[in-house]
Length: 351
Image 1 (cartoon, one colour):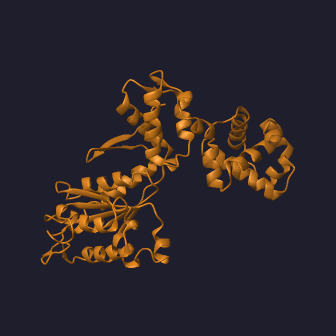
Image 2 (cartoon, one colour; image 1 turned 135 degrees about the horizontal axis):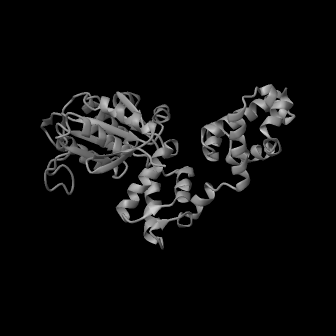
């Protein structure tokens, strides 16, 4: 089945937008971009926060001005300060020249601070003052430098907890989050998985493709490492595969095992979908069917309903229900005898 998606490019970084969640996020970005408000981007590691930040710059009135980015976790504290604010010659040992900081280099443009939760308390205070419009000094400097920068920050950490624990300033958190957006993890935007995988595969070898079964496995995996993990899997497959058609056997073993459906589970799902679509039953009827209590009937009805809505995806169904995949499989096996009974007979038994 063909799938409709957009392919966009932000500062040389390609974006594939297929899912409803990402379409909504991009619409929010387009609305927020023209303002000068600071934006805090939140999401799991590897989910695409930098891509969203680049999109903000792309759609902003500063798009023709500099884009500058820094990972706050990539450098020691004293180097982060000198990177952000620059230094004068002789400011410290080894400072043999004057260096502009990133705030200066990003003048009239956008400065993106990734992993902003890693900033030390002293730097948090200085950053807050700059965000409030105060000019700053380079390290060792005597001349104040004005600021005209749109700041975008990102984090994969729980900043509310960091604030409560005293690791992050409450006032800085609120100053950064004038507009706050959340990038959904890849497992919550399944429609994006195969188009993104195909994009990475094309970059490695345009003649390669995934077969139907391998695409099914890609969609069924939970991707704890998000897009970054997906890219690594695709690169490995492209490099090591014996054929231009990538099959399930070309995928990593742990990915195959985590998304593998046994035939009995597939049959149970199809029967459950049949039951859900063919006849609407009350919790009392569901209880009568299974010979259990009304509470058990309600539980069964809910499991079948969510399983149908997720298209038979056991992992996502288990996550939505707040149970383990093993528990879900066990529940479905308990329903096996009932689900094997023809729908018409079940309905008659309930009358």
